[in-house]
Length: 310
Length: 285
Image (cartoon, rainbow over all chains, first blue to last red; front, side, top):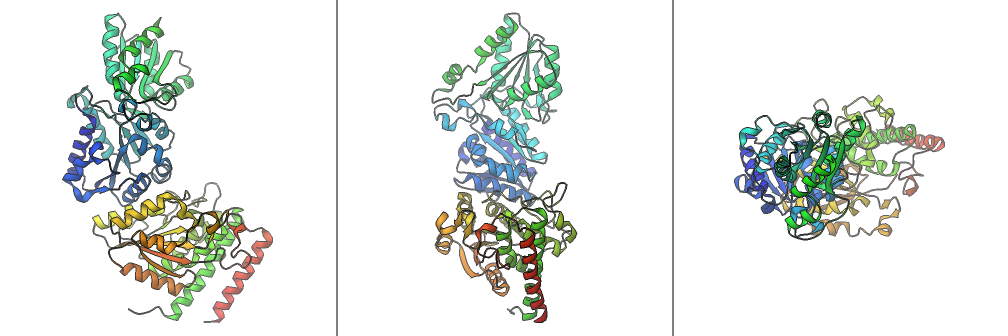
């Protein structure tokens, strides 16, 4: 088990060496977001902005206007909903080279409760023109995604969860990873499970279980929610009999919604279900218990797959 | 240091009238926009762009340039007129403001217009943006200054106070902010809508160096800018005491002209008044 947040902190240190114009901003959460690792290494390029997120986003845009590559971090709730207008005007509309990297996305934040469980961020960011939206699935991929964010121009948002997570990839698996290009992690012919972020690992577990029951599941790691890898989704719709999307996010506005829109507009007749938070605020609790109660784990992926194929 | 000579100030006063004429012309043609807050901001903009700031309109992205950020984005007509007259783009473009397929958007948009540093119009962002520019300047050991203009009503936005705290915390003495203190916002007098006084005490208690002047006296504005630039270890705030609608008698202190353009009769009257003001100044040479 490795924490993707640590992978973020480590990537920042590597990239800080490579890009002298990379700067990092945080809003009093640098120990949690792991930007503190960068701050220790490059104190002159780390800006503690205090509990003042709106200012932090616009300040990052100002830094970007002078050729800096600002990485801005805080929890996903504060990195998007709280500062939507600042991102809209100063980052997206201005096409500023600002990289928003949020941690504590989704309900597996756990005991802090709904105030801290961000389930709308992918949707909020996805509706913004010019914005690229990503949710890496493990620590290795997080490191690679952060590298890609630094190397490519323009507004970007990426989010990871709070918890430790099993490693899915080794470095060599991700040599060719590209923003906007989904990864076929397991091939299969009966059902496609298109997942992002923390749901990729349970999707892979579900694939194993389904296999035992004679069902061949394809697992897609859709680390980029926008721009969506449309070709891959269409391919899945044509080659398998059903599509399941899985995300630690509301079923409205995120990955499932993006896939649904695409399927509808391309007249693809496939069985389809969106797995995610069903338009409710969740609650405090142990992450595993929460994911069970809100039907967002391996068991429920298996259940949905069987239901769809019946 | 040498003070500004009368001839230079006189020239700037004339330029200010010219800019005000552009503003009225633009608003009349666009049949929309914000006369009051554009006119009150003109003299400070003229002082900045026609005397004080260091920039090259042919190189709008020059890393060494001083930056100006119009946080009160609704005063866009005044900014556009000043940018055009400074050589950032053709003055003829001004009359297309707010039209489709035009480089001049209703509110400043940095991807559309050379010389526009930040996209504004949603209030309260400009000072934060300036913080970023100032931090970058310090990191890169550059000498440029960052100037920001906010509306007085705009300072109701909480983000401004986040930015004020951060600028003071980081001792960003390369920032000079200005407040266009005309005492009027859409719903009325600022003190009735949401009390702002004491503006001076608020900013100085946040750790800012505060200067208070007549925002229509260009010599005073230039002296204040020089004073602010020289001041160290603190960001500077220049409170510009202004008159909303300044330069057109029936728009002055008239809140009805916050966001309503002149009709044809008002347009003619306004232009007559400004023509007269221009002639008076020309005679005075």
